[in-house]
Image (cartoon, rainbow, N blue to C red; front, side, top):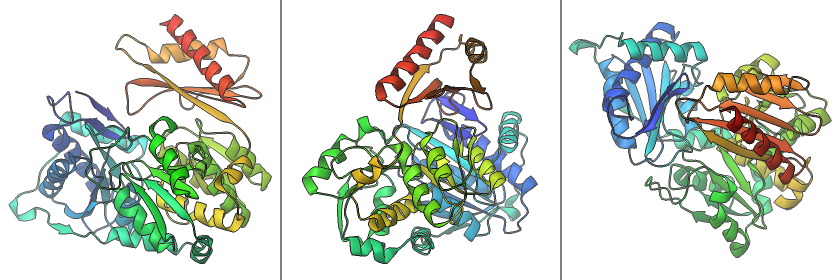
Length: 461
């Protein structure tokens, strides 16, 4: 059993002892701590907290405990049930709520679940707030409400449609252009909430032919739910069999978007943000942001339109903070996460799909042709499993010393920039691993660079 407590939230496998897995006792402590923080920091007076969940098998159980704890802390709960992460974020704002909790473990397998914690803006807690929640949970410094001040529960399942309508209303989403293109589209929703939302979005955009894979939201994921090429062989075959124009794949909570070309080849998760940014920048030039582990292609496209690109530490909250600081008009993460402030400050696959389809329709070209027009970079994603005896901070310091003659960024792990490639090492916030991302002009060079660093780390250990 695994339980990972971090400033990003609490994530773990279902079951086990209170300190081993994500079980009812751990959930109660963490939710009570979150409620205590919200009482302290909120500026709204609604006393409402929104709760949404993906389609994981454990979702109903976890939701009951979360809602019971929140009402026990005196908060009213708006239960929107099956909802994407971006839908829940938007619901917090539309409800004028104090905050929100999303029950999802994102790309992790079905035995995992997690609590993602939102503030009154529908954005993730910052590092300081997350640390305070951890401290409150550890000390159990929270007080439950008496019988006359228990919260109430309201069920509202209308937010899926409200989210879709908000996407259609964006100035740069051209429904008529998409409709006129007569796209044939394949989707893979990995048996989670995307299977409910994506078809409705596409039909609303005027798409008439949709080829569905794994859209039943029962939580028994048909394949590894992380939308990486090795997990997407089925939709790759479907593209050519169905003669589809483009394919869309989302993770279980629908904040990441992977695109598949008409020939079955991957558009590349890194290039989801690049393509959408290209379209947005062509109409509204400005600045962009992505995290340190994202492709240089976004920088190149941004500079082509006269904008300034900035890099942030890994993590949506860090990207959003940098976007606000630099007044970026679009940003996100290289894992297929598109953040478009004209909608909201959160990764949103629905927004990504609508903007991408508008871009493709107006370009009047195949998805593979669009992809070929962007700077050619290749990212290799590798990792090293951690054991208790590994001193990660010491390893990172040794790596910095070994490459002292190169450009180094250490706001989040260690990133080493070379003239034509880079490598980024960081400890994961969600898994007991060191992530090693490397980028170069060829797959072979990116893989080689990553393996060289892995060999170096193993020698250090």
